[in-house]
Amino acid sequence: MLGDVLLITEKHQKAGALIIERILQLKKPKFIVAISGESGSGKSELAHVIAKGLRSHGLFAKPLHIDNYYRIHPHQRTQWRKEHGIENVVGPGEYDWDTINRNIREFKAGEKSTGPCVDLVTEQIDQLTTDYSSIDMLIIDGLYAIKTDAVDLGIFIELTYHETKKAQIVRGKEPQNEYRMAVLEQEHNMVLALKPRANVLIDMEYDVRFL
Image 1: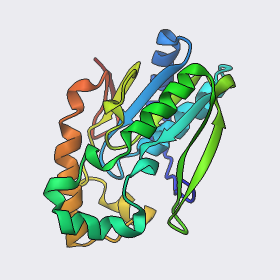
Image 2: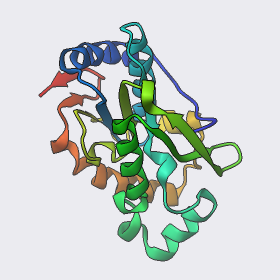
Image 3: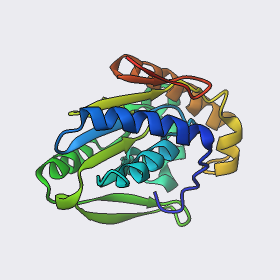
């Protein structure tokens, strides 16, 4: 996402280093890592650290942010959710999985791929083209990232929105109000249901546990 604010700290660096070690043990052509967790839990930060760290091992990893793939435009999403009921629509169904899976297939095939990219400053949706011919790994991050197909290493961050309020305010993506809290609670329930898919857990202290 263009204009995103990354708050990379020592905990992200330490967790990333351990995960890179595991990736190097498991690596194969067109490897896919997926990172799931709630809003503000550090998914994008961890994806960035892992991708940058892999460069020192001669591997090119491309982050793919699932939040670019909402079906409803950012300007319309709040009203759409309110009209249809937060408890009914907030969840994986809000995302364009056909495009997500197409972009993953294009990565696997080493082809050029075009997908959405949200500009957080203008709230416009641009189209970003990536040449995957020289990309070794894809790092998918997002609330429901480990729901995607063909994931080789699934990472789940156990921090909930209750522990990440400060990060959400600093990042300033959305105002913190009653509506936003209701969305975060619904996302909490939906994300938690995906935890059994993970191969790696990152706990409240950002300690890494391999399953």
